Length: 458
Image (cartoon, rainbow, N blue to C red):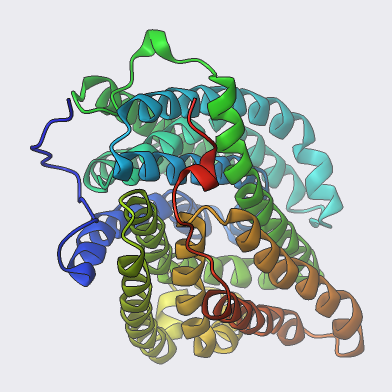
């Protein structure tokens, strides 16, 4: 029997919707902020203590990291949708199968990513047109990062399990610990030992290992229905098919969109090290600015999944509407703050005026359109939570990859400039948001029961 007292979970099938969304999102947001500190701390330390070339090396690796991790993170999304729906339906047996299959997949995926990432790092960076003066440091950082792939995937999958059942607090606690470890080791390895970008990589991998151990311990120690039993970790074929059915579209979406960002990065590289460093610095700021939207998106996914499992269809739409209001209000506030103080914020990463100038240009093009991403994230989270991950993939890939590449390859050559490259983002944000709105308003996207989304009963 499932215990009634749950000190960490937020049950989202009853109560005041906006309060539940915020209660779930706030720990998740703070946790994501600490997770963002991983690469940001790396960038700040190497940018100030090693130089702009090292900052460019770390920044140029981000798109590739997101590309290869994207598929595995998508599998985690599929697992989270299934777990949240089974949790809402109080089907503890299938919940058990889903949790153990998800963790098994994360171990297998992490091993594969390590092998592929270490072997392919030089070739991928060369394909991106990474300048020769940056290439050795970029290869070193990227290879070391991929050595921690198992830790990265296990943590994110385990955190996804907890979030799917409404527990966004413990992932926060573990990220706080691992982020502190990362920052301390950055200073020790990079500043103290003079290890450069390699030191930043080793600091990140060690911190990821700490977070993976903590999340596994939490799942093993809990007495709830989603408890992880090490001896039971194995692939359940039917559950794996269900997870992959929902997860692969999300993974493809994230990976292909990340691929488009790799191509954007390649176009940025043409304008030199200062442009790479400035764009990389703004990418860190953008990562922080977008974190609340990602948190609200995950909250919408969990909220939708649990309420579909509980067969509360009207509540799903109410949650989506209230989530949009919260997200748009946030983006209006953060856009104004960043717009008014852009130079000072960018100066955290580098004192180089050329680097700051490129970062400032990027910021002033993108900030006025953040509200479109606010609406998109809530709609995407709701669509995914309903199990319609294929639809979410088609909308995201069609706009943020295919349309973005058409723009980069057909229009930018006629107006060659750093600014023209940056405009690919707001243009495709707008078209994505519009297609999300059309789908959610004009189609019957909320299923009548979870069996139609995640397979028939055994």
